[in-house]
Length: 135
Image (tube, rainbow, N blue to C red):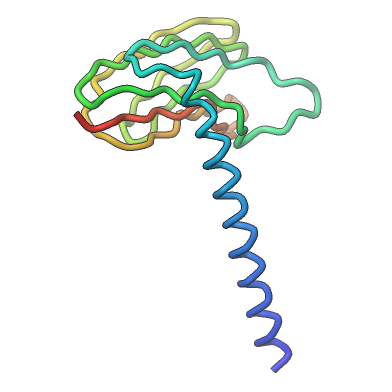
């Protein structure tokens, strides 16, 4: 009986934590609406990591908004080596430290697509979000 109670409490706690995280992220991403215009040309800067700075999901990453069918041009300046990856579009581009690259592709599918930095150390960091609206 005790094991079943602990399992129920654990599941309930997980639901509460995930729900709170969902609402916090939803509210935070919504703040970008006023500062990110719908377009096809975007600039992304990937800064150097400060000592002790955690990697992974950050709440202040940009949201790039465009319309389905438009050409997306992403100019990336990176202080770190690795590769940029637009999930869902399977676009990959190597990055060199302190270099700048441009990635262009057609936004053929509507939806939300994370843009990740795959580092030279083998980690993956969320650096932006591509939001493609239907025509």
